Length: 113
Image: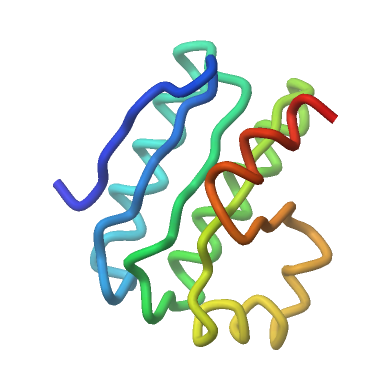
């Protein structure tokens, strides 16, 4: 298992405990998020604090999950992106699609705004 799942303030927080998030883990990660959504979870925060790199397949798993959540009026927020991961979101223009926060606390408090 390469992730940690906790519930904080009613939000599911999934910390990806990988330095490199690649195609090897993308399918399992997509399935994890799918199960969360199917079980009724509407608000998910993905903490990428350990990731130095994510590939397009892993990014795709995030996009698929975000689309599913948006159809049920849910949210998928990201936090703690390292500069190398942040640049991937800039290159692909995905920073316009996702809500991205500097810290888990900021992601959590965004629900109260």
